[in-house]
Amino acid sequence: MSPEELALFPFLAEASEYISSQEVTLEDLVTGRAFRIARSRGDERVMNSFFKEKTQESDEETDDRNEEEIPTFGSEGEVLSEILSYPYARILVSCLNEPAFTRRYALTEAKKASFILKRISNTDIDFLLDFGKDFGIEASENNGQVQIYFSDYIRYSLSMKDISWKLVNRHIDHGYITIRRDEFIRLMQEAIRKRIESSLPIPEIPDNIREACAAQVEELKAKYEEQRQNLGDADLGEVDFTMFPPCINKALANVREGVNLAHSMRFAMVSFLLNAGLPVDEVVNVFNISPDFSEEKTRYQVEHIANNQYKTPSCATMQTYGNCFGKDNMCSKIRHPLGYYSALKFLAAKRREEEEKYGKDEEAGKAETKTESIEAEKSI
Ligand code: SF4
Image 1 (cartoon, rainbow, N blue to C red):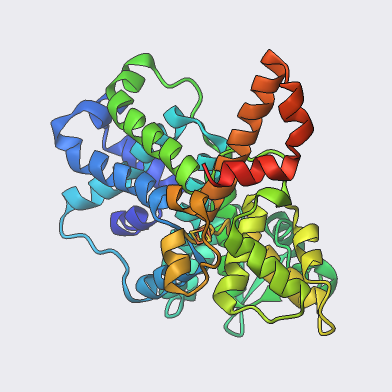
Image 2: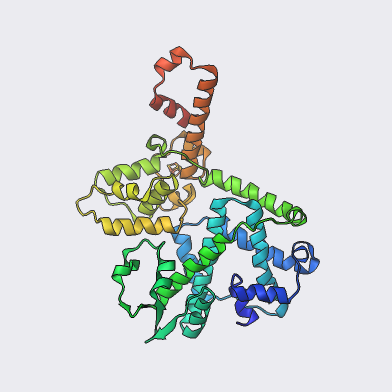
């Protein structure tokens, strides 16, 4: 591959060889003036992967943008900076060392690569076949499609939930399966995600490297914490339906009454329930009320949202789409439906802690039912 191509796919083994050939040390990368651009691009890689609010709509926009644009580089220096931005981003993600963040970062890199692969492979299938070799896949062309050995297919399709990926739904000829190009790219996306995720965090980063990156990591940590609070990425513990925000309660009530939800509200409700910790099966079951309930179709949609780790839309987005119903006092203190939920859970946990510590006031204990106390917290 050319250095320009390696800059588009810096997680390939050949990209590591290219970096070694440039004799850039880790210390140079994190402190050298010559590598400021590489560090700034690395920062961007990490920030973009996590701090853009990731909704289904924004994901689709990203798809479109990437369909049009493959990054181009004006000089050898730009190419090298782009390639080096990847190891720098890996250092930042490793120093932060948050499993959820690492998973999201790996998924974002894999998706970005798959958009570019899709664009290139429209005209150059050989590029795609070569690309597979880096992941140990010997693929060949078969009438414009891609033929791969069944064990390679299984290796990367196992985590795909859609039933079309099940081996029983594929035709095997002498151990080989023929799949469409876009399916092969999807397998490549999974291969990239697994490679990046399983190689993070980098073990034993030297202290001087950690120290040199400390400021960026601190900034990342602070933003991550803020996001956990605002976008509900905090560990929410057991799911408690009594603490859901009014908009989600309204959507759940509509589903129970057989009212069809607008696509945007359906997406918001499903992503909320998944992010709140409800398993896929239970989210599917929420819809198992309407007479035209199709488990297969609903499961496909729910799993798509779960597999892509879509974020629940913020309150501002909910308002834009006309999905903000029944605002209460708590709503004025948060910016995200999951923020509402985690704030109530936090207050309830704090109350329980205080009760355990000081003993519950008997009179208040008699009067205050759980519902009353939640209502009180909502109006704080
Ligand atoms: S303000 Fe936010 S949490 Fe409250 S109802 Fe509207 S969208 Fe839901």
